[in-house]
Length: 282
Image (cartoon, rainbow, N blue to C red):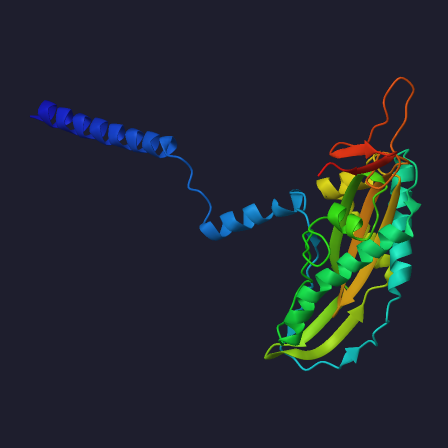
């Protein structure tokens, strides 16, 4: 009887131990539980800043909301000089080119007028929203246009600028205010408004371009030797357009045909040489 009882106890302990071991192995074999969906979103958001900014480059204005009564501190509008901005952006880009062993871009007044006109055209989109009473966190910008050309090449041609063999364009929008605190129940009730310095805006804008692959390639391209910068302001935002060209002496539309020993006079592709002038084949 005792022998039977001992056998029963041994079998019971053996089965219990086997069950516990299998349970332990089962837990080990299971995949680890992923973080909650909220945590997963936070992890994904950490990688966003590592992705180059797509064109066009837009910097948004962030506003801080306050629930407590603060002493009002609204700085006077500094009334930035837009033409000084244009020269400063051009100079900052040239500094970067020199650091990369590239020749500086010559300033071109005709190209500047094209860039400035495109900045003013872009500003109209945001001005419409402001006129409608909408709250805007950034200025709307675009490379496309319909007022005087769909792209920079068409816009240059529309202003009788033909003497280039290559062209490119960088655009960006920047908020002019560094700190903006508004009431929680009324975002139009401003408690604090601090303006950025002109120098910091130039650094912020050019740094943004250099951190974006397409903009950086334009700035560091050996195909360009001249440029113009046009700046416009809408509300509390700045819109900057820089147009790059590779100026040539011949071969462009309305220009002289290129001549080279051993070759017939020629023009750029899509143009034909007639009476020593390059004209559209159409």
